[in-house]
Image (cartoon, rainbow, N blue to C red):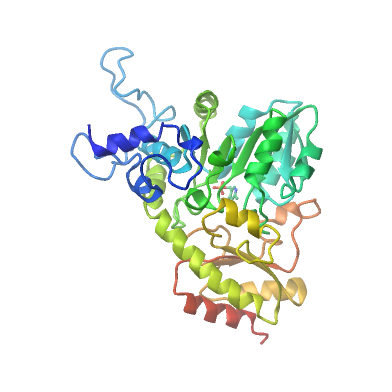
Length: 404
Ligand SMILES: *Cc1c(COP(=O)(O)O)cnc(C)c1O
C-alpha cells in the first residue's frame, strides 16, 4: 500500500468533525499535492494521466475494471480531481462539473422540487441570481433574498416550504461576510440544508463543512484552477447519501467535467496554498493604498478592521483573500474610466488567476442584477489581485486612478 493510498483513504475519514485547519492526518498543503494524485499503476507516472476516453473495455459482460463503464458516469481523471476536492474541503464526496453554474444547477435540482423555497443572499454572483430568478423560477422553485450576514434575517426569511439556505462568503462583488457557523445553526434548527459558495475563499482559506455547512459549491474556474485556462465547477458534501443523490443527478443530467479540464484543475490545486498566501499579501498592500487614496470613496475588503464582517472573517478564514472592491469618487463614469485606464490589471471578467484583473460589476459581471434587490453600486470597481509584484500593481492602480 503506497503512501498516496493512505492519504486517499484519509479523504474519506471524519475530517469534517475537526475544526482545525489541518484536515485529516495530513496538512492541507500535503493533501493539495497528494490527494487523488496516485502514481499511475501502469507506468508509475507521478502525475495522473489524462484519460481522454469515452468508454472502457469490459472483462465479460458487466465486468468493469475499477467501476468504469462510460465517461459521463465516471472517468479516472475526473475521479482523481473529485478525491482531491473532497480531501481539501474535508468532505466525504466531491463531484466535478463542466462549470460552476452546471454544479449549481445540479445542486438546486437535487435539493429543490417545484413548490419548494430557497433563501438566497442579497449579494451573490450574478449568474447564481440569474439561475434562480430566470431558470429555476420557471420550474416552480420559489426564492427570496435575505441579508445572510445577519443570521436573524435568515431565520426571518424561512417559510414553511423552505428547503435550503444559500450563502456566499466572501460575497461577490461586495465582499460581504456571512457567519457560516451561525447560519448553520439557523438552517440546522429548521431542518434545512446549508449551501456555501466557497469560490472566493477557496478551501485553503475557509472550510465551510467543518463549520456546519452541508454542501460546498465551487467555480473551479477561479482560485482552484488558478490560471485562467479552464472553466469548471464542483460540489463537495459530508453526507454520503446526499453525495449519492448528487452523483445520480450528475450522471443523469450530464454536465460533467471533461478529462483535460479535470486534469488542469487537479494541477492548479497543488499550488493553491502558495498562491493564496501571495494573493492575500498583494491584496493587503493594495487595500492599504486604496484606503488612503483621495479618489477612492470606499474600500470593501474583509481584512480591513472597519469592514463589518472583519471579526467573523478573522474567525472563520485563515486569510482574507485576493478580491478587493472599491467605489470611485465621481460616480459611474469615473469608475468605468479607472477600469479602462489600467494596463497591468487586465480589463476582464472572472477572477482567481495568477494575473490581476479589473472590472466594472454594474456593466459586466453583475449586469443581470440591474433593477433587482441585488443591484450593485454603479461606481463600483472590482479587482482580482494576482501574483505579480505588488509594486507594479500599485503603480498601475495609481495611474488608473489619476484624474488625467
Ligand atoms: C464564477 C462564479 C460562479 C460560476 O462559475 P462558472 O465556472 O463561471 O460557471 C459561481 N459562484 C461564484 C462566486 C463565482 O465567482
